[in-house]
Image (cartoon, rainbow, N blue to C red):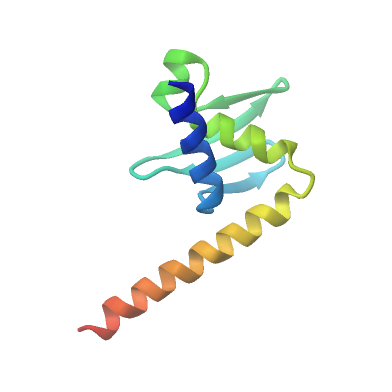
Length: 98
């Protein structure tokens, strides 16, 4: 169970799917759903059903990892820029094929 959760958290980070909204809120984009991870009273809380059931989820693991990185903001920005470039290339291919 935890290996899968850690692998998904790593994928979320690597694929630029964690967006920092503020020092206390993060937007996490999974394959199908979007969730908010908030810092409340020094703890991370996620809006996903898995967190409500287990008290831990891949979204929280991803945000926790990011918060522990020294250069978390630059990592997020780099990954989001890479993701945007991929999305724009895919969009260009779709438009060009019409």
